[in-house]
Image (cartoon, rainbow, N blue to C red; front, side, top):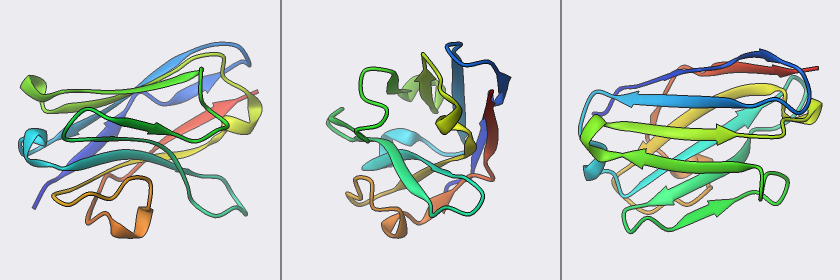
Length: 121
């Protein structure tokens, strides 16, 4: 089982940037899918971005052109670079991983981090 720990969240003003990190206890090279998801109070969890073993990325329409998902297999770390942040980006952000292809279907991921809060005002 893979353990995931997110970091890098915080409180910023609209237009600023943050980079989230997700450190894995095991080799992320063994994960077919990794992704970032977010959930705001009173709203359902939504997929933000995902990356597969081939490096193919998928983004929610709301973050295309602003967010970039990437991974460093040597450091066993997943990243989410968030630029031009908007108040509607405010949410708890979680990273996830699985050995099968999951895309941005959250219920298909087996391994999850505890989350890091992002607040944009």
